[in-house]
Image (cartoon, rainbow, N blue to C red):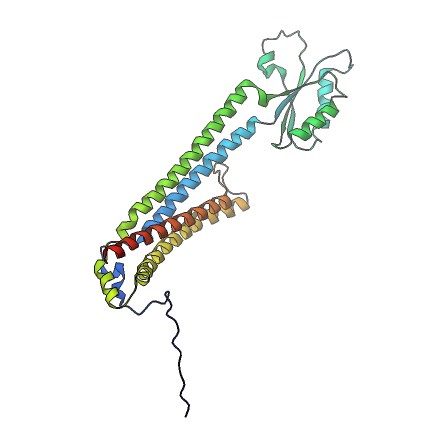
Length: 305
């Protein structure tokens, strides 16, 4: 008769022995709060900060873009050209509308310009064409304008983005964006700090339970895993709940409305980018919560020794 010999496998530190369920911290002490609702609340706060930051940021950037790429092309009466200024402007306007990168080209009344408002009515005024180009089309536009100058030798081009008032306004917008970005980072850091400060409330001292687990033969690594797994699951549950709430109530509807062009123009958000920012924030919250949880539990286990 042959005897089957069984080999004992090496103990797996991740394999949890069957301990009574009431040894878990929350079940053992009803005063220990679950981290899930708090983590969901932190996710909502993070989303509100990110959404507000993105809305204000996009609004200010749009204002900056409106100050850039604005030119005025002036046509004066010249002995070199028999055409009147208005005829030159009309001809140039037909050509400009076919240029790539031009968003808008339209005739402009010279009397509406501050420089010509006090001019005598008998004085010949230039014909003006106002031009708006795309943000990245300045190089191509200036190249085309140099070619166009051969047909209109008396025309003058003015870049309004270099005006003193426009430059000062751009500087103010850039300073505001810098303050906005710093404020958003500080607000996110305060949320993480609040989460770290709240961690001890869901990790109350459990010296008696730790001592009992030692009697049952558990090592410190095993005890740390038993406690941390229970807490981190609730933390992950809270983060998932918060993310699902934000995505279901706002991000997905905003994305679908924007896809069909139904998103109100006053709402300055990018749902996809906002979702990426939120995902990064969720990862940051989980990593911070995980490190904080294990650090507190290590101290509790050490103090119970």
